[in-house]
Every structure is written in C-alpha cells, then in structure tokens.
Length: 523
Image (cartoon, rainbow, N blue to C red; front, side, top):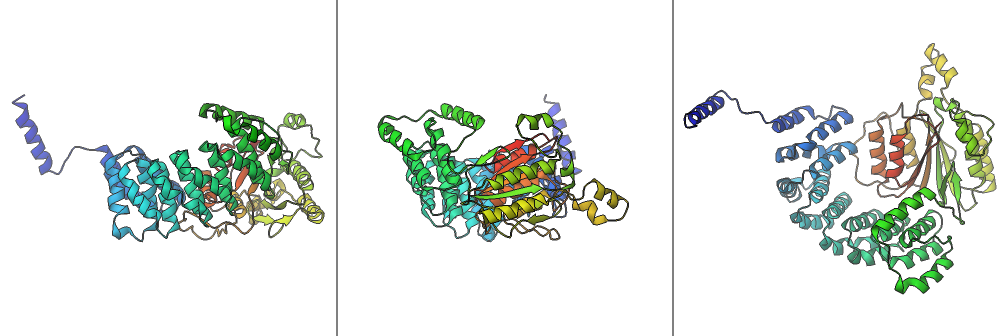
C-alpha cells in the first residue's frame, strides 16, 4: 500500500499536467445542456433537454436551468421549474433564494423570479418562506401568484394569515391562487374564515374554487354555506355546490336545498365528518354513478351539466366523414340515426341538445378543421328563434377536405383543399377560450395569467375524432400546457367527447386537467 500511494500521486500529477481529469457524467451533461439549449431549437427539443437534467440534482444543473425559467414556451418553463423543484437539496434552494429572489440584479426578470419562487417552495426548506411572503406583497401579479404556489408547496401553516387576506380582494385570479395555496397547505382552521367568505365573492371563479376548498379542507362549517349556494346560485355553480355537499356529508338527498337545510338543522351539532379514506371512496362512487339533476340539467352525448353558459366546439375535419365503426355501441344507446357518418351522428345529437336548452341558457357553437368558424360572434340566449337558427346552421355542416376533395388536391387541382380538412386543435381550443391566435407569428413569452374572454362561458364541450394535424403546434403536450396556462385562473370546465376509433389518451388528460369529463364513443 505504501508503494502504491506515490504511484497514485504521480498519476494525479500527470493528469493535471496534461489537462486530464476523471470524467463526471453529471458535469458532462450540464456542459452539453449549455451547448445544446438554444432558442433556435424547437420547444420539444428544449423540453427534452431540460428533462435530461432531471436526475442530476446539482447546483451546476440548477444554474444552467435558470435560463429555461425564462423560456418563451410555457411547457419548457414548467418542466424546468419541476426539475429543479424536485432536486430536494438545500444548496439548490439556497441558489434560488440568494441568487435570484434576494438578488437585486434580477429585479426586472419577471419570469425568472416567478419560476424560482415556485421551485424554492417545492424544495421545502423553511428559509424560503420569508422571501416568498415578501414577494406576496409585490405589485406584479405573476410574482404574487408564483409566491402563492411556492407557499402552498412549502406547506407551512405560518403562511396562512398572509394568504387568507387575498380571497376577500377584488382580483379573482389572486383570490383563486390564494385558495389553492391554502388547500395545498392543508390546515383547515387557519383557512376557514377565508374559504367561507370566498363562497360569497362577486367573482364566480372564486366561488367555484371556494366550493371545492370546503370539501378538500373538510370544513364542517362550510356545509351550511354549500347548502346556501344551492339556493342562490344558478347554472354550473349550483350543481358544483350540490356535488360538494353530497361528497362532504356522504348523503344522497335530491337537489333541493330545503331538504338539505332541514336535515342539517337537525343534524349539525352531532354530525362528524367522514374520514378522508371514506371521502375518497365516496368521490370515486359518485364519479362512477354520475348525477341526475332535477334543476337546470342539460346533456350532450351523455355528459351532463347544469351550466347556463355553454360553448360547443365541433370537429368538422375530413376524417369526420368516416362511418362510425362501433354500431353495436350506438344500438346500445337506444338511438336511431339517419346516417352512421361520424359528423351526421354528432349533428343529430347537437341539434337535440340545442332544442332542449332552456331559454335561461346562453350558448354558442364553433366548428373547426384547419380554421374555426363560429355560429355567432358571441353567446346567444337559447330562445326559440336562436335555437331554430342554430339548428339550421348545424344542419349545413359538412366534413371539410374529405375524400373527394383530397383526391382533387392530390391531382394538383387544389393545394388549399389538401389542408382544409386538417385538424387544428390548438386554434380551436384557443378560440374557445377567447384567445387570439396568429399562426404566422412566433409565440412570445407566455405569462402566468391571462384575462378571461369576453363571453361568460364556464363550460366547453369539445368534440373531436383524432390528433391535431395542422396549426401552430400539433404536439398535444404543448397544446395541453397552453390550455392549462390560459385556463389556470378561469375555472372553465372542458368536457371532451372523443369519437375516434383509436387513441384519445391526451384528450382524456386534457379533460381531467380542466375539471371536465372525458367520454370515448369508440368511433
């Protein structure tokens, strides 16, 4: 051993002399990331590069990923925040706090500081709390929302008093963000007054979030508030309150607030909330059983809602002329259709749904293929005249760029028709959410919160038969991330009805991420 040591020392000397050093694979990956990561690469390439550093977990990797915190693509930014937030190391949290959140040089770097706030909270070290609370007092809404997300991830009840001030404020996005943070922290007692007060907020999005918070935080005092919401709310929120009170109490009375209130007046003092495991079982059972409302119920292809502000988004791409491939399933529904073509079946169902809408409901219809066409410029009341007009408009819908048109395009007669029947899922969803899209322009840095659209839509039915084929992006991961970004603080439920023969997993995730129901008709 004594003779070996001088040999190792000599080897080390020669290694240093010729510039060789033992290879550290993680350091190599960080160096390669710095070379590879560039704005000229596609969002998918940048996203994959960020994910490569997921298991590195070093300070060097963290500093390299800070650039991705400011990426113009929301999906890439989210990936970078989640990668760094998953490192679980104190020295990484120190970098985020000391070199970003407390560093004056980053004071104007809005996205960088917001990303660092979220990731610092996810890392879970207490010293991040004070910088996050300080950011909560900023005038930049992106920083405030990021601080809320960070404090929620930190799960420290000491942050509840500061967060509890926001649900009473006028800004709906901040109120929603604060409620989510309080739920993430999970301490019901410090959050109770804020949640109960939010049930009466002027902004419906805040009330909807508060309804869910009562259940998630298991606030017994909120049961009376939920029953009251059933009495005074209209449309979707009335249905949300009904579902919430059923889930929290594990009772299945019909949707009459007087019945619930009579029961609660008699039971409240002795009532004990079910334990979380039983609540989880009840949630699963209710999801399987569904709900049959006696008030304000509408249904489209089996998906029920009590919403009074509906938007139907219908795929009319070329593939919608395909014959439905599962006639046994259609026969089981008990319906007879004049045609088995996918679009013709959808048109019949949509016509029936529109005909049954009460005149208290507002609705609109978008048809999409490569482009999007609206029935009306904005939502219209479901009176007899508008319903008749909508039925006529629906009846004229045809699959665009179908087999005959595609043949003409292939023979060189029409290049435009070759693309007309494509499926522009991105444009359809952004249009449904009220976002303007310019396919010729590159997307700029997407902000944390977007203003709600002009129409008071709270529920979207999105029907399609396959993956996107044209548009600004055809990557469903990117599309889902964009929808999540735009819809994060709006609370719009997106139900997805899939009539494709295969696939649908991304559309199922899209529905789940936006509070909706996914139905596959196996077309």
